[in-house]
Length: 496
Ligand code: NAP
Ligand code: MG
Image (cartoon, rainbow, N blue to C red; front, side):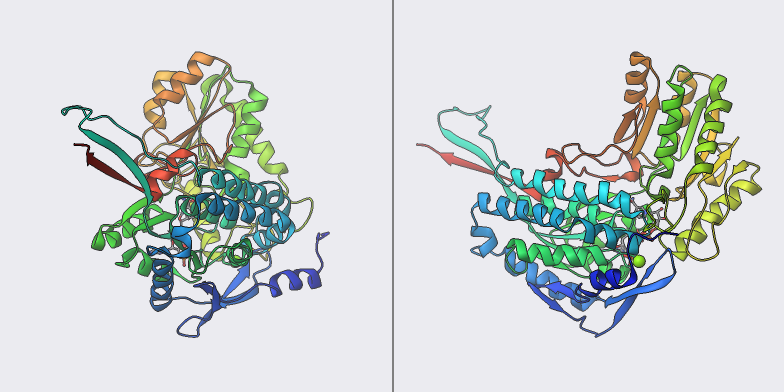
């Protein structure tokens, strides 16, 4: 195996990171003095120990964020153009550290270095660059009154930052999820406490260092590394105005309950079980490549993974065999190997979970392509197709969050729509066909926040993203994200 990096280089990049938390512009230990270890999922070896933040640290970070948000603070009085420049500079610094970030993402999460370098890190920079422009473009409106003399009053709205935002993120795109959360919150003028996932804290620490370099005032961005209890302390904290969460539907429901104490605003990006509908009139080669990408990209650890593959009867065998053939040729290995296409799953827990679903598919009678462990060290699972699956199987109903797709045939457009929509989730969906009318009819009838037509996994800072049903509340990215981080104030002036 040819690794792209030698051990001393890895040691230098990981070793140069702070192992502390960022609170009020300073790197500090946890109040308890405790640390926890983060593991490289390709080798099962410890990468680094970082501070284990708990409720007391969450409280310290919230107090710093509150002080930074107070009337008259450096952040609240800063010209919006200057705010935008700092956010833009942070995007530049992310690009200047492209290779370090890609290395940290690969080591901590397992994903291929080449993928992180081509996708995660540039998209992170783009998010800061795109959102920096909004800092000067979030505006209210003037609205003439309807029931009163329109000349008697001057009436307008202001858009003001919501306040202190707690942002709790998962491990599948550690850096990019931080950017999706932090960039718009800063553009809106909020202050932030970010809690990265316990499995992948490292890239957030580098982002914190760069945020200070970019010129963010102390306390505007705080980072508390730790476990779920730190997240829970933020979600229930009485001085947090808004909580934004990405992760499991189960924890999302806990967040809603915890937020009820002070009725903080809540947005949620939760799980999915995205249907992928392939019609017989599709470009079949494109449909096979797209369907494989839909489920196998990022080890299948994608909330929008196309995990239910519905194929029109007449091309079912051809498409399923094509996806299985692609699965068999995907090179699984250490993310630092230049030829690797798929890395390990993020943790032992995720490995057990995913292989458990493969076993359930097997015992429920699905035909298995792949389905094995790869190697005997690291959390590697072969890309897997469960052929001839049925709607009542656990592996078809529940989110797996791994490289496992269940394939089922269908006969007609009218038959497949209710089946595709028969899920508690509604995050992503896709359709492959060359018939434009059928493509748009299907796109309109699928109940999901994003529908891809003849493609999958295209994301952009301009495009709103979020879920119907139990896939969440609210939208991230684009202009829509500012509903999450602004309050509308209406001002009514008597002109007499
Ligand atoms: P998770 O528990 O929902 O974790 C997401 C984030 O929430 C992490 O930062 C986590 O901290 C934190 N957290 C955990 N319990 C919390 C609580 N009670 N209050 C506030 N924050 C809390 O997800 P997971 O356990 O890592 O993964 C489990 C499953 O979730 C996956 O198999 C997958 O199905 C789904 N998932 C979905 C997404 C998505 O993008 N929608 C992403 C990741 C996972 P810790 O890291 O310390 O637990
Ligand atoms: Mg790790």
